[in-house]
Length: 549
Image 1 (cartoon, rainbow, N blue to C red):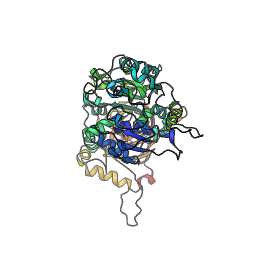
Image 2: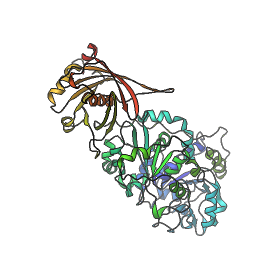
Image 3: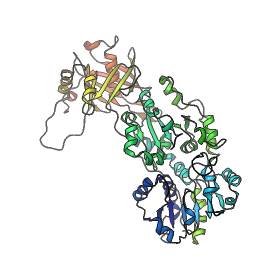
Image 4: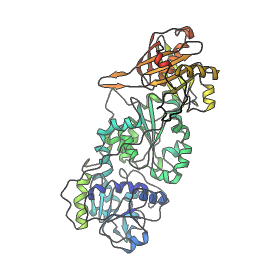
């Protein structure tokens, strides 16, 4: 059995089909790279990283194969010998590329790619929805007799992973924040091509403790740009905490974890709609978007992202709470047989192989847990609202254009300039060194040293645990801050204690805070990311003062 791969995106589609053949020692899988794609370098790398055995193209042409599987009709597939099966590549026929084949037709409907010498190249053309067969009949009737509705194996992996949402969010460190996922397809009409400033702009105006930002990039864009240069372009947003999804599986895990998806006309939007996610359109695809397609109807119905005033971004991206989101109906026009794709395809593929399927059931693989998100940013511009003993805190990147109250920087991670410009310096207690020879400061000594070493520093704090901090104001005595987790129904929510330190710093320097002469105990309500946390300021416990740092 030969998997004919033209791009990394096509390979990923084929890998989602592998459970059909798992456990069957009668089947041998080989992969080959179909020449002619500008994205073939990353396709070969993706095949090698999957651990698959790859045949050179000339050897693939020289052999006859019992079954040939492909997820793209492009390339010289007609020269391969064996029954070919064409599988879904994306969420239907929503995009037409004017530089390829027939300018007005998506490649999935274009006879230029579906026929060889006037006859269908594929022995089986698997489609995801009955409407797609109707469209195929209009544009390439010769291929219709070999078409069948088989659902979408990639969608089934997404759907079977829905109950992993909490696990995915825990791995990403999302907590109680709203996860906003940007999705960019490839080409001149993609989100990153049309609005390259958007990741950094959203990072600059979405409070870190209320929102987590992530980005899905089409594998073709990874291939065209290269990982290093892509990371360079996105560096401001990445340094502000944005998660960049890997091109295989991680993008789908992010959709399961997401609250809101900001999208262009790429297929990811319809996979997000299948999960009924809140969708916001960043751009409309212009000439590439096929009119009256499921994608066109979806983008016409969802709100548009207008950031003329960055202060409005949180409200634009918050999912509605008073009504169902209602995007699933657009996905229902693109995907049929949800959860049944592998069961539908298995007998057809084994029929072409001339074999009886194994007796055990087949099921889609749940998505793996995504890698942990990068550490939180090491410095912030902090906006503060003090109302008596209630303090609201929004932490933004240091380079934001929005007005802010103070800068906060984490000692040991932030750069020298950030430390020197910060009114609040803080650090976190790490794991003890395994070495016998050690040197350390106590927490009391460290806070005093920071205030002496950095003239601009007004407050020095240490995060001793997720709920306990030690804090010293300039001219005052150290005190302990105890943070009470927020309870909402059956869930307990913790916040970053460094955000609470910013709240205490802002309150202590306000007219109601009493300045450095204030003596605890005092109780504050710290509203972090919109969630209230009760913080109690107490005289510093001796055990906290003597904590090794």
